Image (tube, rainbow, N blue to C red; front, side, top):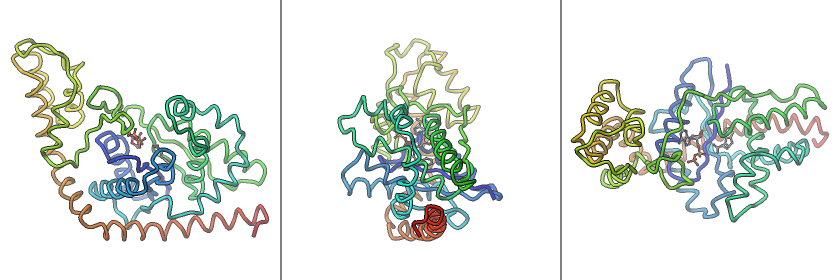
Amino acid sequence: MAKVLTGVQSSGSPHLGNILGAILPAIENSKISSNIGYIFIADLHTLTSIKDPELIKKYVTEIAAAWLAFGLDTNKNIFFRQSRVIEVCELKWYLECFTPYPMLANAHSFKDKSNNLSDVNSGLFTYPVLMAADILIYDAEIVPVGKDQKQHLEITRDIAKSFNHKYGDFFVLPKAQINEKLMTIPGIDGRKMSKSYGNTINIFLPDKELKKTIMSIKTDSIPLDQPKNPETCNVFKIYSLLANDNQISQLKQNYLNGNYGYGNAKKELFTLILDKFSKQRIEFDKYIKNKDFIEKELELGESKAREIAQKKINAIRKILKYN
Ligand code: ADP
Ligand code: TRP
């Protein structure tokens, strides 16, 4: 059985980018009978950027509800909160002692964040080591992630190799699974859709708010009667990610014909989202109203994850003679 592991931070409400870029591909992967998925909510990583416990908790619930609404099978896969398997922090310490300081100082994500954020805490600096611990503690083999996480996977492999070099083949070397074809989903302002840019489409919003978000997608100012270029339009780009071929060519034709305003295209997109995700929107609301159920699902995963993590920690303590 291949162990496929991925984590999503609880740093905001789940959005279309997370869903198309991470949640749906991971669920597809987890359905393959020879795979077992380790799907977790990286709520400890979230503390590097959010300090409000209520807010983190709210986002944990929403992210969990999104995974469940999209049909993650929690019996076949292990679904858990990172913070509830605290062994990962012990492993993080051991791994830190095998991580050369410059490797972290030169990581792109740390450099980007430390240039742009006012709160440059040490958690941001050691972020990749916690991520390495997340992966290595479960002997994960395949880690589906976005392109932005590629270097973190390389760091994970380097740390594992450095430990293995000294103590034998203890850690499995994980492989990143990066879907190069998967495009970066654009946000309502045309930049990458991201919680940190405040440009997301939260498909689980109530109708009215969802419509408001979609109507606020940025477009150019070509007058209504003029033909428009679908290739450069955000509304069209997002629509194309969700629609079938017929729908796409119909919308394309409307753009090219002229006498078709962006307002119309936005309404089409809104209807498409309601239609495409109608089931998941209902399921999401059902889960959000039933937090006890979410809690039980996570606790089930956490007891399985903890058992595996404890075994790995006991083995490492033995090697280091801390047992
Ligand atoms: P955000 O940028 O909103 O903070 P995260 O860093 O929490 O998103 O990403 C969680 C997962 O969702 C990652 O696997 C990431 O690659 C994927 N993801 C996030 N935004 C997008 C996007 N705009 N397009 C495609 N995938 C995305
Ligand atoms: N750093 C990842 C992100 O921001 C989240 C994450 C934490 C993760 N630990 C992980 C992803 C382990 C894969 C494996 O998207």
